[in-house]
Length: 421
Image 1 (cartoon, rainbow, N blue to C red):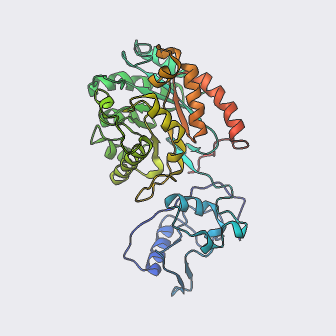
Image 2: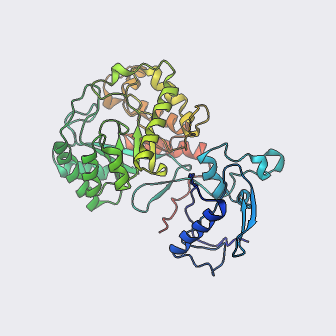
Image 3: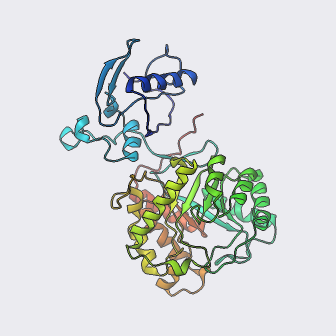
């Protein structure tokens, strides 16, 4: 019997190695629950601060009674009833639970993924965003003199930059992405202190005036740390942790959401590294998987990671970028690529706004005049399952996506879930 009238809660599946027997592991889990404040005299299936269950123990089967009289059945006897258990378990490894072993599958008429469980992304603080209901919009704010499209537009002072950021928020941006270093092809590296001087005062003032989610666009750990201290929520790293060895440990220590983008080399060398003999989708997918593995090894939680295939970064022509957009769902669903260990699906960010490939397709040589083509790329990204798009023109993109999502994701534009402590 379940208590259905209760607040929403977070659920996750964790894989671990242990030398404990199933009985000893179960007892240890219950001890952790007790230490967290769980009252075992309360309603068993009602609200509680923490609930730890032993779902599987390799391929072994156990049906026993503990010395205190509590039953222990492994695999968990009722997990097939709980979408909130099965969805994260299947995300962890789609092949870990043969459906027929749980009485699931087409012949049973039951779908293990039905129910009101849905994936969320922690967007900083206590914000939890559904990743399956609508396409979120990240607005670009470059406080640089030399970015490829809007360089020099917002670097005249903090007030000018904050005014531009607030306009992005007014236009519907879910995230404002603030960067102090151009990563256009051939761009020179910016010294750490200079990058901090450009970005941190803007973040501090914007945080005073708005509760919008702020991301810091940087490759450098020191800049990321200063930005988070100033009020930023998310670290957006175009190097995927490859540029600064301190980045991943810093993100892990800060417990900040992390956008891991695919790029080879640096902005001044990436175009020479755009050969993908094994296929651009296959190699980008494999290299992003390696990046996720490195992030997890450094202590970054998998649920804090968003992936970005890096449109225009070490992708030399329109053909490569179009192939990534056409097969974007490959990264979302992780079905066509053979990962070992299996890839836990991560939300996907796509940043195609005003990129050169749009100019190649349309004949438009001025980056600032590529907004309509950029909207087309954003819709393609949404169709491919992207969680978020990074754009210069927020109002046009936002309006187009509102219509597109209403058509392609009917009934799923629900309010964001209320954060739970």
